[in-house]
Length: 451
Image (cartoon, rainbow, N blue to C red; front, side, top):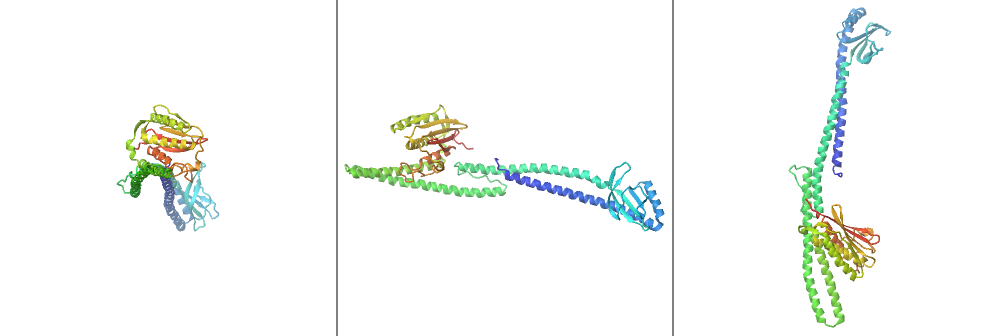
């Protein structure tokens, strides 16, 4: 899958190979046992025939044995072949054409008058008269076993491979389907739907046991994340109220201070510090609200071109007042599904960062373009930029490139932009503008709609 079914496919191929090897070994075993059984039957027939002839030789002599062999060959009804040799191994009688054989049972080749040969089982023994008698019987039954056995096991092997491949495909498909269910649930959780759970079937197999365990783990994680969000929100609400009261008291003191310049300046600085604390709490609560996914219910079709055009006109004047320049290029009728307030807030954060850190180094540009199934909003500047090794870190909360933290800001702006992008199913990418920084906000047109 992609490569999800690689393990299942390898397991199926392993078992197919094992079954094929077992089938081949079994085939050779059956062939060997069958051949041995047939050979034993042939050897038993040869032994009975040999016993009869040896008895004739012992009781009636070699001459009678010769006549008996001649008579049996003339009748040619039993399929045996005979060869009688004298003590010096010279043929006496018999049509069997085999090389001189040692005493015992074995297999030999018979050469016919037309030059063809075929295998025979033979038995050779030395008679009382010192002559040598060989009795043979064609091994045709054994040879006849070869073709059907080959066909049988060849067919079995092909069927086994076919069934194995089919079974392996079904096995891989089943594994892939179960894993895809888990993967889709995991992707939904990654996208912020923490209430998603893995489906548990009635089979009660290992996958169901794993799904139950993972669901219990997700329940625990969901509870912990929910508690963390509630605690963060409660802290924000609880602290914001007394800080607001403190601000109001300091404002009253500022009024009572009258024309005391030193006291008035200190009170103004205290009010500014309190405003900074309140801004941090507001930003944190906004980020938590966006990351929770609760704002997705407000997503609706919107004209992104119109919103960005108004934003560009407004910030062009802001940049001009600050001695900087903002250029914007927005095509008409670019529509997406999302929360317009959130998207514009993200662009505002990018513009303020660019104007604050690079407004005096050159123009800041704002552009919108259609890309594939989505859109790209790009804010680029000509400032010092961000080192590549720091770009992944600066989008985290409270991360600032100024270690002394003497410059304004709380280190939450880019984190909020990323949260807004991910809430819409998009992403934030920081790139090198050569010189400067190029912030790319990618958003799908459907708002990251999930099935």
